[in-house]
Image (cartoon, rainbow, N blue to C red; front, side):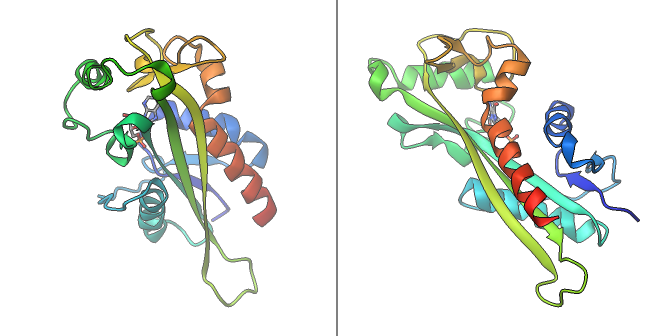
Length: 208
Ligand code: IMP
């Protein structure tokens, strides 16, 4: 079987972004589902990096010997709230709670907090597990993790219909709007995931 990149997600939006950014590696990029891999992963790490690596290793265990496996973990850190919701971003207030409610709650928790203390960032860690080069004995697999971020602040109201999750309350100074108000090409260019994917691509180019 020839070389493939498997990205550990079931999210099609993410896959589009990943395919676009990793295009010049000229290696087919498949989602877990497309590769026929189904695995239940317990994300019990204490950092974005640990969780990304847990996912990548779990998928690598089910992948072919030549496959390169990538997995990401991302979230929102709000400095005033001691970096909450952080690695619990998806689970904050419960997985099934709507982002209208989560976002309203976070704005409420920042009531009366001035702009300079409302700093926040989206973080994305991407872990890679790839086979050792031919002829190498040890180690059997090579691994690395990269981190991409985008710095901004939490606004006073939800704005914008694009994006997902916490985008309507996350504002960028240089654009003067929330990331939910940016067209997707612009968000991908500046986003934590875009930044992490570009770093990941550079590392893969060195290693392959
Ligand atoms: P995951 O790493 O894709 O599972 O994302 C974790 C959670 O972080 C998501 O469910 C969102 O709550 C939040 N998140 C990650 N990236 C973004 C983003 O680009 N916009 C808004 N929310 C995000």
